[in-house]
Length: 170
Figure 1 (cartoon, helix red, strand yellow):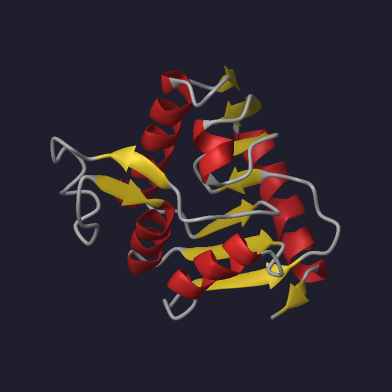
Figure 2 (cartoon, rainbow, N blue to C red):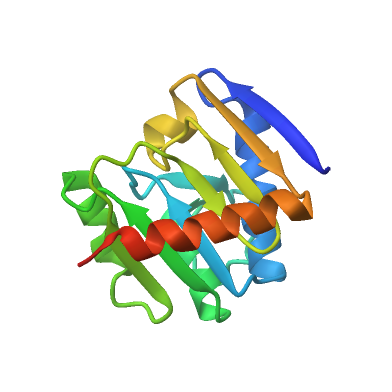
């Protein structure tokens, strides 16, 4: 896959499967840095682990569901610098940040009036209308583009770094 667009209505399997693939790639082949850009973030269940198929990739996750905090903490454990740009004043987002804030290699900043959403790593760039929340992943009608085209990834990383610098340190 080099470039793909997914329209999700009510959390389609196509979207959740794509997220599972991307999140697993990062756990197996970690990037140096990952930017999560989403005004609202919550600790949504992302991967269905009922058969234990992700147990070796995310060994610290417990239970039948693997949550966004489990995934981000696993990335950080492998040495990836995870940078979260969000609306830290939102109640659900603040609760999520409380779950990951003491983890080494995870930092977050507040960006006022931000409406952009994306996930940018050295391996891929995902962007579109989806917040990293339960509603964004599993309920709302969303559109996301995923690309592994190197020029697009490089440009997105430069932009994400600039957004990180302009965001407020918490």
